[in-house]
Length: 522
Image (cartoon, rainbow, N blue to C red; front, side):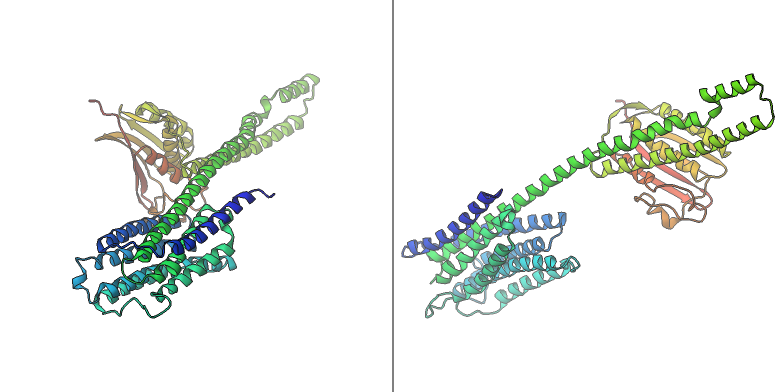
C-alpha cells in the first residue's frame, strides 16, 4: 500500500458520504414542514454575509503571501458574494421591502440567484486560472486589476438591477422544478467540482479537499433543495440557506488549514535557513581565518625561523658575494608584496561574507540583539583608533568627540555601525578631515560622521540605503564595495529603534547622522 492511500480513501469516502447523505436527506424530509419568516431569513443571510466577508479577506491575505490565480478568484468571489448576500438580506427585510420596486416573491429568488451565480462562476474561474498557469510557465499572471474590476462591476450592476428594475415572479409552479433557474449556478458548481477532482490535489492538500466539500454542498443546495422550493420560507428554502452557510464554513476550514500550512512551511524554512547560515558561517570563516592568520607571518619572511637560519648559515659559511644578499632581499620583498595582496584580498572576502551573512540573518528576522547599558565615549574612541593608521596613510585628519551619555544597545553591532560609516567616510575622502561626534538630543543620542569627500548626487541619495546599491559617480565608481554596508547599517540602527539620515553635496562632503535611544535618568 502506498503512503497516504488510506488518507486518500478516507477523503474520497467522506466526500461521497456527504454528497449522497445530503441528497437522500431531501427525500426523507421533503414531506415535512419547516415554515419560517422574513426575520429568520435576514438572520441567516447576515450570518452568511459575515462568513463570506471573512473568507474573502482571509483568501486575499493568503493570495498576497503567495500569489496564485486560484486564490485570487476565490478571495474576490467571496468578497463580492459577501456584498451580494448582505444586499439580499437587507433589501428583502420587512423594513426595506416597501421601498423596493419588486415584491419579495420576486426579489428574494432573483437576488439569491445573483449571489449564488456570482460565487459559482468565480469558483469555476479559480480552477481555470490554475489550469492556465499549469499549461505554461510562460503564461501571463492573471491581472488582479481585471479581476477586481469585473467583480465590482457585476456587484454594482446587481445592486442597480434589484434597486430600480421591477422583477418577474421567481417561482415557476408549472414546471418540473419550481425554481429551475437555480440550475445555472448548479452547473458552474458541478464544473468546478469536476475540475478540482481531476486536478487531484485534494488527495494531498487539506485546502482543496475542503474546497471540494464546500462545492459539493453548494451544488446540492442549488440542484436539489432550492430548485424544489415552491414558495418563500418553506423547508427546501430554509435548508438551502443552511447548506449555503455550511458550505461557507467548510471553505473557511480549508483556508485556515492552508494558512496553518503556510505558517508551518515558513517556520521550517526559517529553521533551515538558520541551520544553513550557521553551517556556511563556520565553513567559510574557518578557512579564511586560518589563511589570514598566516599571511602576517608570510608578509615578513625574514623573520621566519627557516629564513633566519638560512641567513645565519650563509654568514657562517662565508658566502659574502654581494649578489647573494641582493637576490635574497629581492626574493623576500616579492614574498612580502604577494602576501600583503593575499592578506588584503582575504580580509575583503571575509568582510563580504560577514555582510552577506548579516543581511541574510536580518532578512530572516534572526539577527540577535544583545542589548545592555553602554557608555558612548569608549565606543567612539576605540572605533576611531582602529582607523587612525588608514586615515594617516591618506593624509586625512580624524577627529572625534563624545558626550558621556549611556545607551541601551548591542556593543558589537554599535561598533559595526560606526566601522561601516567611518570606513566609508575614509574610503570616499581623498583630502581634508573626518569628524565623528555624539551628542544628546532629547531622548536620543545623535551620532554624526562628517567627511570632506566626493559627496553624493541628490538623485542617488534616495537609493543609498538599498541593498547592492553603489554610487556610480565618476569619482567613486572604481572604489570597491559590495553595496551591502549601508543597507545593513540602516537595518541595525532600526533594530535599536533608531533612525539614520544623510546630507551630501557633490565635491563638498557627506554627513551621516543616526540616533539611538539614550538612557534618561529619572
